Length: 124
Image 1 (cartoon, rainbow, N blue to C red):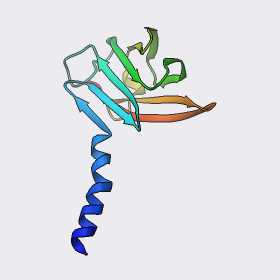
Image 2: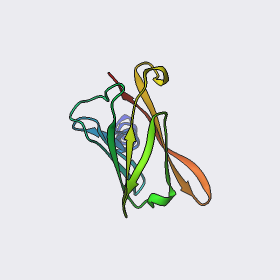
Image 3: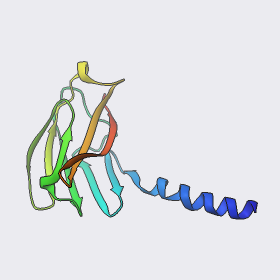
């Protein structure tokens, strides 16, 4: 009985570790079902620099860029293409949350805005 409980627990816990991951530097991959957002910052640092513009490219799989929105102080959409959007990020100290920039990603699904992911990016 303990073995069955352990196996069932692992099957439910394991997907939560594979849904999101941070890859080299400040780059992230967020998954929700078959929908994927890949965030690539144009810095090799593991943080954003205070009062300096950083370009962010967000690539989409199974998500329309037209149904996507990003929220955060100091973030401006600067362009894009068929399956990606580019943003300029300019972190300002007075709007940081414990030295982190708060970013929220939303997706419009069936006429409703749904939170896709909310996360903090370190700023130095």
